[in-house]
Image 1 (cartoon, one colour):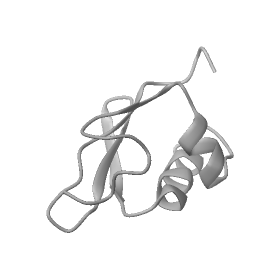
Image 2 (spheres, one colour):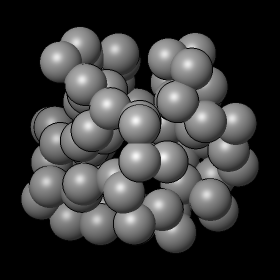
Image 3 (cartoon, helix red, strand yellow):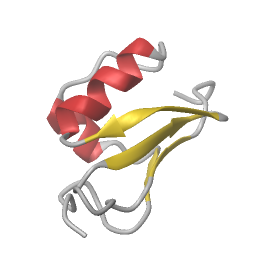
Length: 71
């Protein structure tokens, strides 16, 4: 995973969604860990399940970890 671009999950918005950035691109608004996994897959970063996303040490979670989906 050393060649993967940085992945940042931003704090929850009013509606509970979290912006997802892969490298220098915002790839979408995630509402669940499955959404994050799908965005990563579409960006060519990884083929992951929700549990993999939650455990990935290379994902930077801002404003709460993988369980934080409410403001």
